Length: 367
Image (cartoon, rainbow, N blue to C red; front, side, top):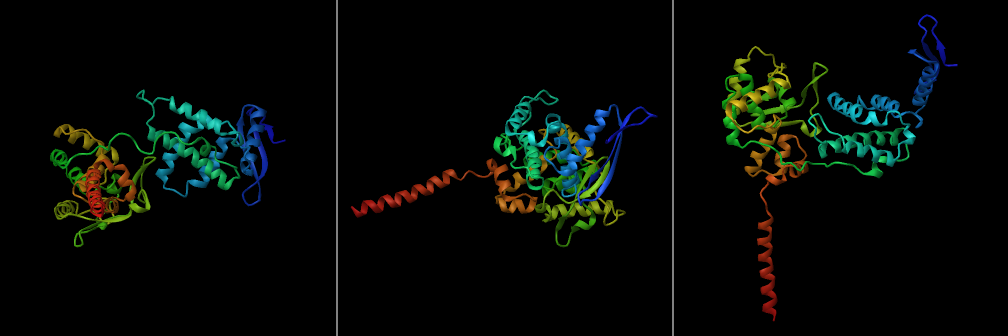
């Protein structure tokens, strides 16, 4: 019998043997159960989980999924996934067996999500709904690949939400940015940080990870090879967001002159020391301060990246050029910022009209 009573505490504990992943017999001891039934249930669920059986509870499968995935992706990426799973998925599915989760159950979950409101009393945005659904689908895809699940029920139901928001991308014009940057010149770290963010389009995490060693003023370049994240209160340096994010960016001469001035002010910094040693909250507050002081339109800090891309589009650069500089996929640049590119439809129609006129005159001459 796997359940026993501790005479001293009056509580129950589970003690049993199980087979680990390579077939070795191991002992498991778990204390603190109020009833014998709870101890037995724990033993049953644990052994089912360790066997990889699809009769395991979804919450137990989540622990297996976590162990399998957590070391294969960036830590902050996993933490985003885990938060979404714990707050939006586990509350609905945790007590169900994996084998019991059919498409109709997923569809009921969809309906729950569509009727939930956030802290501001608003429905979840379509892009957020799509992200939540994608997390559940990833979990089931993993079960199909590694644990013998026959079919991913999310593929039957289809996804909810949208890949891209209907809202237009927010950004500043160059004139608005220049008005803003005047308002933060009184703090060196803010001024030089925002100058890099606007004129290069890098992400905040990439900015915060920069060191002196990442700059080559002779070649006029800045290397992006890492990202700084605040995880569980600790500063963590990780790889950039995607493989495409590792890149070398050419800098304009005026920005190089500014950065040389900044480097003189931080000459005591070592080559591998972060040159913008401030957290995300600091830069958000400085953004708010500059906006209030300069009276420009309020946008989010990440929108400085959008502003840079908007400027490049206005200057006539192609999605491929822009993607190489900003670490995007070129197709994503085209999709996300398509409304900013010059509309070629009229030009196409006019040129086709000329082709039509030529064809029409040729037919008439034959008559």
